[in-house]
Amino acid sequence: MATAAGDVLVTAAEDVRLKKGIAEFYDESSGMWEDIWGEHMHHGFYNTDDVVEISDHRSAQIRMVEQALLFASVPDDSVRKPRSIVDVGCGIGGSSRYLARKYGAECHGITLSPVQAERAQALAAAQGLADKQVSFQVADALEQPFPDGKFDLVWSMESGEHMPDKLKFVSELVRVAAPGATIIIVTWCHRDLSPTEKSLRPEEEKILNKICSSFYLPTWCSTADYVKLLESLSLQDIKSADWSSNVAPFWPAVIKTALSWKGITSLLRSGWKSIRGAMVMPLMIEGFKKDVIKFSIITCKKPE
Ligand SMILES: C[S@@+](CC[C@H](N)C(=O)[O-])C[C@H]1O[C@@H](n2cnc3c(N)ncnc32)[C@H](O)[C@@H]1O
Image (cartoon, rainbow, N blue to C red; front, side, top):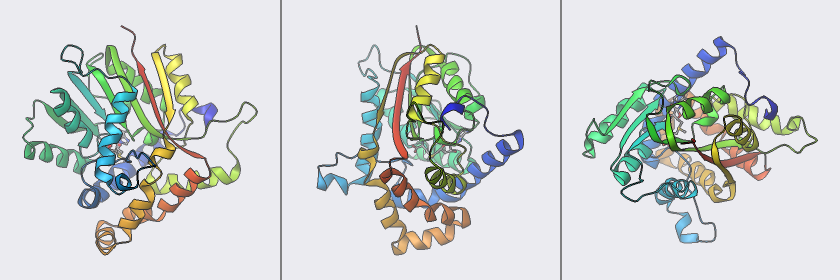
């Protein structure tokens, strides 16, 4: 809910239940996702007028990473490029390894899922990345195991929607950022409310609530809420964009693969949480079509 983005929206017991659900959901479903979609567990970025490109989903996922870096103006020259990166909500580490290789940087990924952390580390070793350069651990984004000011790039790709306390989430991103660091949040939001609205319409809430219970999400907030939070923390160069039309081909493609023979057998093998997740995928399409769901990027810099 827009006005409550900075509030603690769940009780301690709900918080524990939510995090347990998130960990189990990704423990259960990550192998299946990797099998079918590869190491990036996020939307692709599509230039929607290019039909050929739309079928190339793995390239579109890499393009999402590149577009985010471009949007945030992350420098790639040898003097100013990032050297120390945190990947908050790292999945099986697709972004971490990509960013570590691109910049020759150190990257630390955190996730709630032990299965993901272990798989991410195994993939790094298999790809010839040393433990010292790329490491993964189970840790909470809201209480990160890192000292203040450690990272010059703070990266959160599609994990913010899982965070029950957006103020704490953003504050932790800012705390671990070094002076002058870039912070990138790519996340699912609900539409911005008009000045006369206090909340979404009941039919819009209904769509989001159904998605929440199957994907282990707390209450959603809007892009404007994130911007307000960043402003309240005195961050600089705050920018945001709505990339909903650039991700439109993604969910239809995921549903198509879920309905293939391989998709159905993998889903059945993965378990009930994955099946429940698959069942709400059409609601993501409906939410985007009805303009209640937004795929947003929000970036800023920590003052020097
Ligand atoms: C959709 S996946 C995105 C994974 C990855 N960023 C990528 O793009 O491939 C969401 C990730 O957020 C992580 N996550 C959710 N809540 C978290 C929290 N409180 N602390 C750390 N990680 C969290 C999940 O464990 C999962 O790895």
